[in-house]
Amino acid sequence: MNPQPISPSTRLRLDILFAPADRAEAERLLVNQCGNKLPFLDKSDEHQLERFRFAAMKLSQGQLDGLRRAIALAKTDWRDLLMAAGFGEDTSAHERWWPTADAR
Image (cartoon, rainbow, N blue to C red):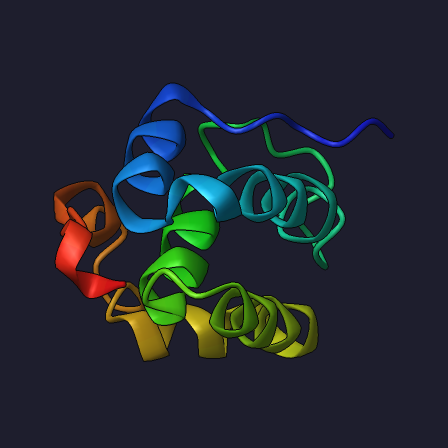
């Protein structure tokens, strides 16, 4: 199974949230560790993975260490990640989330 790339919507949020020097690593982490390798998400495409990737980015607050912690939570139980980000009870809540550059 090949890792799914990030979607255009994920790219927009990543570019807002992460400093230019951290963007490539943030993308690498999202593609390789927060994607279709998560439990029960193996058949998900880049758009279906947005909810999980947005949640990880939201919890990261634009920091790579924060992103790594959020991804570790997703690997343990991605439902906890979704709840922590406020995306657990509304399946479209992630679509309304927009980070701000001052979140870094």
